[in-house]
Length: 209
Image 1 (spheres, rainbow, N blue to C red):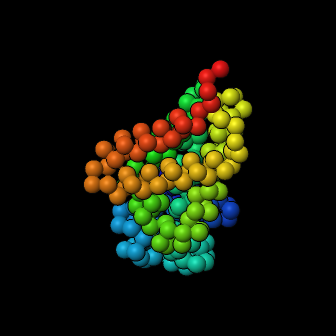
Image 2: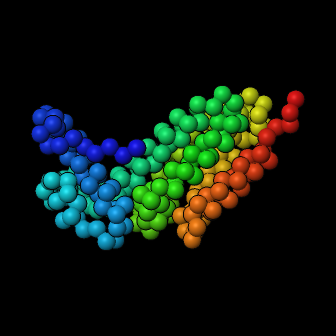
């Protein structure tokens, strides 16, 4: 899902294009380094060297330095994950199956080492719990709520407030992903958490007509 920015020779020459290219290069370099070693063990000197820009460029685009850059990386990963989950869910014709497929896709996305390190391990400690949850909710909550509302409207879920249920479902998926990330046997944990989340969703199904 992650695409590196174009090399300097291929970058746009306009000022706006140069700004975008520099920002993309910094985010890409930081993302690679944060995934490799974690936020605490990466210095800004390494980031600018890998991005091929100056230290001044880093602070020009990210005034609060490494922490603000980390936030941009987190937002990018979350946005990619949400797009991927949405594509897989919408491939299902049945609204309940779409919801179940989306939950599985979220768990699979969180199983990636890069996502585990940046999203599940570092995000809360670097940005604080409230900021991390706000970013997660801003990008993921609306997708889950829309899927739930679609299933309710189709008579596939018991009628209830979709937003409240979306908070509960997304929280369950996030916690399940954390369990998988910290497990000694991630494969077994992924299977167990996936089955548990599916049973949770099964309990919300509307009775068959």
